Image (cartoon, rainbow, N blue to C red; front, side, top):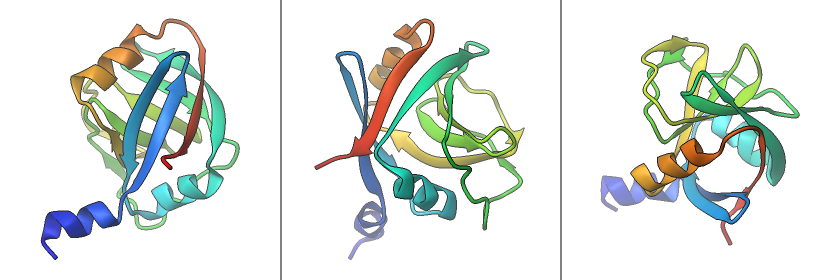
Length: 131
């Protein structure tokens, strides 16, 4: 099996639904992402933070087992900020940040990022498995 097919088989496809918007994404195979998968489906209230990310408090904190001390997430990444126990959808490049672990990535590149940016104020999103 080629490496890219093997990687794809270890990803968990999800969708994030808010209003009339449905974004698809993939969660990677790491301990924190597996903890998030175990909590799905989730309905969370997201708010904007610093005009760079949307975040929501998770009902249960995720493990940081095997995670680096921090990471440099990219726009479109799904991350977890461990000190606050929040799920974060990145839409700007913030550089390296301690306490961040990357969980996955939205599909659709700029379209997904634009959909997140268009959400002004708090919004409710449902995160669930793709059938």
